[in-house]
Length: 106
Image (cartoon, rainbow, N blue to C red; front, side, top):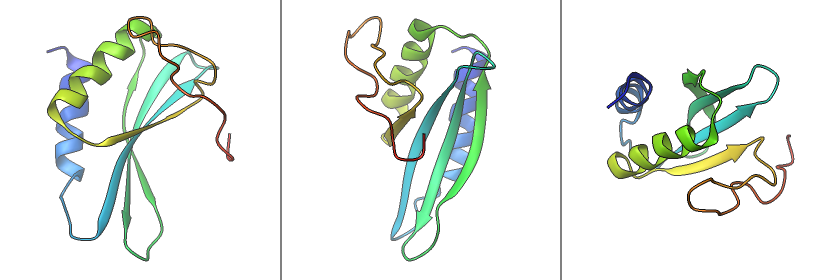
């Protein structure tokens, strides 16, 4: 397990407390200007605002590397993923669209 994956999983375990009536999801953001991928965990207790906590920044700007990291995260932690900044791009191995259309806040 490489350092990026280990660090992301450790931080997910730290913040994913499995509280009752709380929604959790992971967000991956493609920072095209800095050429990095940013990981966040979003936490929303029922009736409250969303908290977005940064987990890690991956400096290796390579989609196949990112795909491997995300596949390993999905094997260990079963949370939903939300992708931002990947409009029209495809995963190199799966050949599926990452993000079909832009979100309202992009």
